[in-house]
Image 1 (spheres, helix red, strand yellow):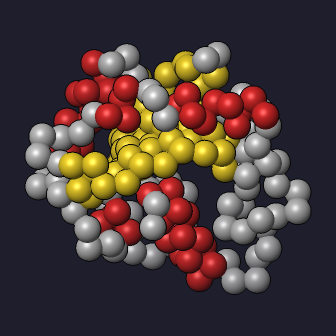
Image 2 (cartoon, rainbow, N blue to C red):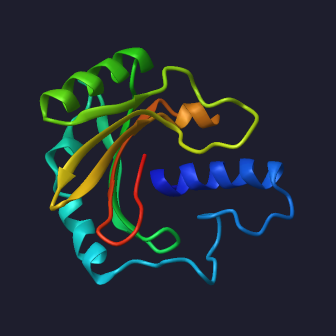
Length: 169
């Protein structure tokens, strides 16, 4: 399962358990009033896929998955990668913190603890960076599937941005 889809599936499952009967859980299913993607954001997605920071990965890891597109539910462009076989989450987090700041990204938020096993997950990103890209704020998120109970030793790096909707980590 692609990284973005895996994070969304886990978050939606958690949200469904907490908010049974609440029909407005954004991003878990197609909502009739969902903003969709503008043509401008649809064109932005492939360019996000070429941002060099998505190619950054800790020594010894290999590319496992890559994706790019436009989130029709929330109306933002996204691109990401997952890299396989990280040895140490703390070392990988330190690697991305140093690499992203060196590349000009501003650290917006750092969550050093894994996602809690109960409750609503708003963001599973351990690190969230921002930078202006093509006239809009871009968000670079670093996350770990193992934080969601996945048994893989992967790290995910995802970039989101929108000219016409809302993006974030």
